Length: 514
Image (tube, rainbow, N blue to C red):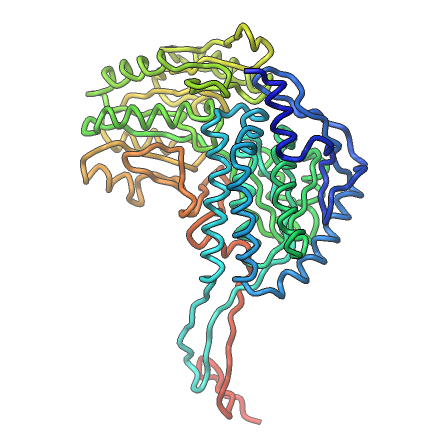
């Protein structure tokens, strides 16, 4: 496959041939005042395009225009807002293949996963359209005569969405499409490792906005997290920051936003474990664990990083898992049959190598993989072997999240021991148990079971559906995105009391006579 020709075709199809600006606020900024940054494909280590990023001045302009757009947007009814998201979803359907290719070229995802990322945007658009006719608040009984009390949800205003490279477009849509139907305007700061995907998506989305004469509620500003991310986090005009990234960066964002009493949604990564009991369906368990560990080359926040297997079936399970790993094809993610593509960059490869080395020093035994891969035709790409390491106990390296296809294996004797091992890490995003025993399942789902925000039974830790609220506990940060009632995060709750009588009775029986 000729990557150069494919890049040109995709850029032309997405109308990006002449566009290198990374700033959009009611139109593409022709001459942003930030640095020029190259988008590098991890497939072959070569540049895809040069992007001019934003500066403090560009950011200021984006916020002012977003505030203006919000004042117009919030006057529309939620179903009217939903109609714009419906049109955007339709346009994404038409451009799904090309957008999926951009995701694959820029982040190294397989073509199936690249298109799956865009499908997820389409799915959340459909969800948001339906939700636009279902925004609701409770009505409560008042203790006072001739009074009615209820709650309603008002839009926050301008919100900021800061995304990571591993899901370079779908996580933005989780936040932005839901926030939009609530009535907010959105400023997007994408990862500097996936700016071209963000520009591609924004180019499509904003054309729909303009052609249908809606307020310009979606803005994009590329640039470093240190500059643009800090500006956004400390800005009182940005009412909510939804941040996806590392725990270290998330702590900084959380502290900065908290100082101004702003709101945050934090998705800071996971160190996800799967428990496999002796009563599990082994073939199903193997498939779930393999998908969870290998999808996106181990670069999902929901990637399975630890398996905790009952001693009775440990040897059989690990032996069969090694067989699956041996059959996995590592290589160009654009080629048919490749399951594991590259890591995002050279730094990720170094982190992989360092983690394998630490695991060995901490008593780990490499059962499969552990090496860097150099492909003949893609020698400058960033490839590693899927790696399986047997660990004698919980150690410091197994308590850390390494964004790479490393899977640590532990033995256990009782389910209580398994849950203790599972909950021993500081992260708390996704979890799973494989069992056909009802008691084991319910123990895992009880208050003393999994301590994660996502708990799965007989399915992988990866692959969350958009209909459920997504997010985690502990060092994962807190807050929820996407489905269920996560839309309430993008609104301010208001309790309303109406007196339709001729007197003012006070609550708690208080008397006040004049």
